[in-house]
Length: 245
Image (cartoon, rainbow, N blue to C red; front, side, top):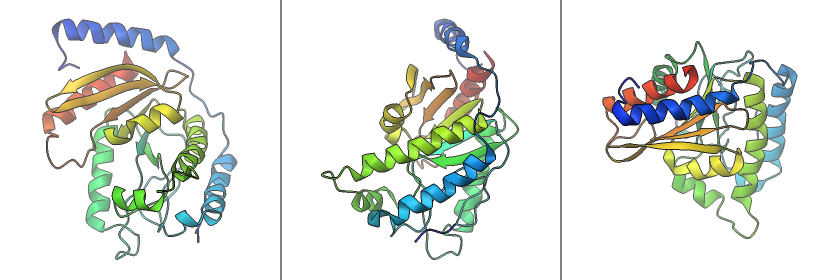
């Protein structure tokens, strides 16, 4: 039951500048179009949805509009500059907050690292709100193609995440995890701008929301292999260019 680039040079740099010039034609004024009450109501809607769907009731918790991790995550009440859009939250029932202190601290540090050059504040949400121990467990939980459980869940989450984006009117959305890029494109009306290659495949997928807000998809920030400090620097440089060009 639910409880409440400076590193991009030469011809590539020229092409990127042209692309950014086109994207920034969409620049829009910042300002909330959704009230705090609407955001608070969203939490009740998530709980009601989970209670109505047995396949979600085994999940230990959910994450939405949060400025911290764990079951006691604090919800953001003021607009932020950066939305970090994860895939789905992990869980570790051995810990009272459903996440180990080390994992919590590491993830907070990564969020701060990637957000710091872009604005004064950030908030976390997920493409799929509910937690699982890993992606394989999640797939077992929602593996019901006949009833379209997974697609229905993603559509529900997208509806509330669009409310989240309207409330915060962020400068940028950062999505760590290329695996779920296809779901973001399908459910958030994204327009693809370009993909930036890295040493081991795609480093950045640059999309924009209908209002022109940049949405960048990158390798997951906790990737153990093939994600270097140089890659991190390129992502931060590119993101800063996306919001300031």
